[in-house]
Image 1 (cartoon, helix red, strand yellow):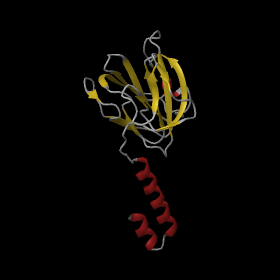
Image 2 (spheres, helix red, strand yellow):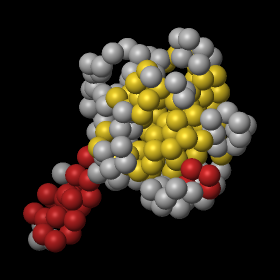
Image 3 (cartoon, rainbow, N blue to C red):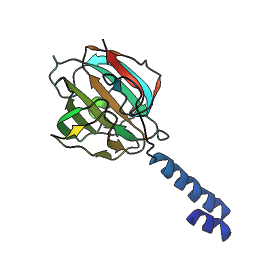
Image 4 (cartoon, rainbow, N blue to C red):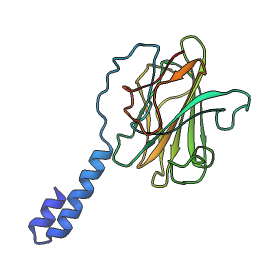
Length: 195
């Protein structure tokens, strides 16, 4: 509305800039409904974006001998930034770690950037985790869950502002169902399947 008003009083260029900024912000904060049609034992992506890393490793700051399968998803500023639970279960812990704001697609972002680690236990009491990693543009991580709560697969658990990354850590008995470069959607795309 402000952009149209500014353009109407003779400042067309400024009005167009205001309209474009408003459209970009509205696009960023969109939150579409998602329905998973995959089997209940499949692990879903917790973020929209592009798979930027697939490997095995420990949780950030966790015991080096507890190894998980890791799938990292980079979210550009154009992706939906609402994060969703990859599996159902109980929230075991939520831990925020202050850090830097390096480019989120870099491999070392998980270790150095500001992040929020959410640890869960699935229905069979197997631990899994999701890490919200702030990126170069992102300066705020929102987490909407607390220790002791139960989450459903695909449930909204938070969001990260303006370009960031989500690392998924799933039990090793699952096989990874995506490859680096694949596009995924939170609450819909299967990233892990029982082995």
